[in-house]
Length: 247
Image (cartoon, rainbow, N blue to C red; front, side, top):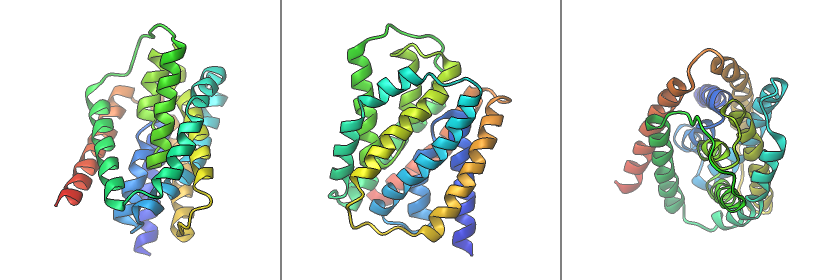
């Protein structure tokens, strides 16, 4: 019963972050699965992809209904990351657990610092096919390797590289996250990782509900405030993970 309650609470928080920011929620999923629910790193990164796909799809529907998704830009950005996501997904299952955990902790620290210190991007840079392809490929590789959506990278990249307005960047980032996560999950389909669906299903259910609440929250609270709150939480989680690996 305790594990079930933890799954529900963690799922709600993940959905809230994804729905409000298009970022931050998926990178909270892996440590929640490992430290709260007892998953191994390999199990957690695979389960995270499933959770990210379902939750992001729910949040995407809400943003699409509001007309806040740039479909062409999102699909072009995602296309660049499909092959890297597949390759990284196949590679990750052969990496030692301690390496995966440490790599994830480093990424989480960087993501947290970005969320806490940076303001929401306001302007758009010059659209460059090379920069867009590079950013998309990098995001795909991160998604495949560590089982995270990478929205904290996708949102500023969509604004600065593809000139997507900030009002549509969150929704568009969800489209990118879903595409990369689907490919990465497919690449892992033949692996021998066993998943605990008794905990994953309620986690997903709570995350889906949280995503709808997150969309409503985004309309009432400043994006900068939301970024700082989730960034601070993520930083605490990341430091804890890193300390656990080192010590």
